[in-house]
Structure formats: C-alpha cells, structure tokens
Length: 197
Ligand code: VGL
Ligand code: ZN
Image (cartoon, rainbow, N blue to C red; front, side, top):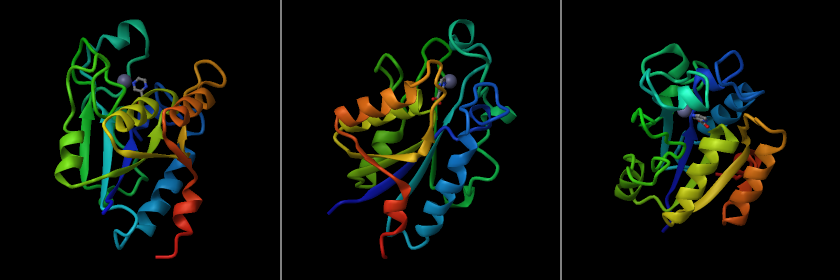
C-alpha cells in the first residue's frame, strides 16, 4: 500500500513578488496549489498536506553573509501567502530557527545534524510517497527533494508548482536536472488534476 503526502515548501510572503527574497513569478504557483487542494477534497490524491515555513530568528547568520533579512519569526514576510487555501493544511513544519545554521531542507539543517519533525510525522502516518512543490526551486525545494529521496520516499517534484530565485540565470533548471538525476520523478500538476477519481 502506498500513501501520498503533498509538501508545500516555503510559500511565504518574503519569497513572493514584493518580498525581500522574491522568486520572480512565485505568485503564479498559488493557483496551481489551490487547484490541487481543491481536487483533493476527498483525499484521494494526498492523505496529508504539509506546509513548511522558513522561520528565522532576527539575528540569523545567513542575514550577515548570504541573504537579505527574510522570514523572521512572526513577521508578515514569514506568513504563508494569504491567498493559499490554508484550511486544507494538516501540519506546519518550521525550519531555520537555529541562528548559527541554515536549513534549506524541510527534513534536516544544512549540516545534516538536526532533524525537523517532518520525517517522524510522515513515518507515523505511513506515508511512502511525497509530492513536493513551492519556493524556491534552487534552494529549499531542491534540498527537500534530495533529502526525501535519501530517506527512502518515492519523490515527485511538481515542476509547475515551483519557481526559482535564480541568483544565476538557469539555476532553477540546473536544480531540476539534479533532482531528476538523483531519482526524483518530475511531473506537472496537470497530470494529477486529470486523474479521474
Ligand atoms: C530559501 C534561501 C534562504 C528557500 C530559504 O525557501 O528556498 N532560500 N532561505
Ligand atoms: Zn532562509
């Protein structure tokens, strides 16, 4: 028996146009996600819907070195997009709270030392397959997908449900190629939406 979960990565104001670390066209994925959530009314696509939030303290190390201030705990920028259908989310996973160590992946910090609750939560719910989308393709989505594969989940990337930040042009495509090479199945939301259920 397989059981599926949808993991919505970091669909937060700061990663959307107008936010401090915006993925261009990031807002275009929100209707894609809402359509999937709507299609899933009877839970036939996904048994569980999980959303992650990048959730940094004000003094996070990455603000000094790499990134503009973003997703500070309890700030407007850290909130999930307002037009995302929040009512369907079963579980929120926070990451990136340690001021010293960043956490791109929804599963582990970047040193692979601390785990978030996500793997335990999926295991407890007998999830075998994960479908991942969100922001941004070239960082948090990519590392979440790679960790899901290494943890043994059958892992799907819903490509049209993601946008990259593209610090270098083409970073998003490179990330997709890497996920595919590591074993992710790249799909489009349309293939899930047209499933007759
Ligand atoms: C992210 C950069 C820094 C992401 C988070 O959500 O992909 N990227 N923090
Ligand atoms: Zn961050």
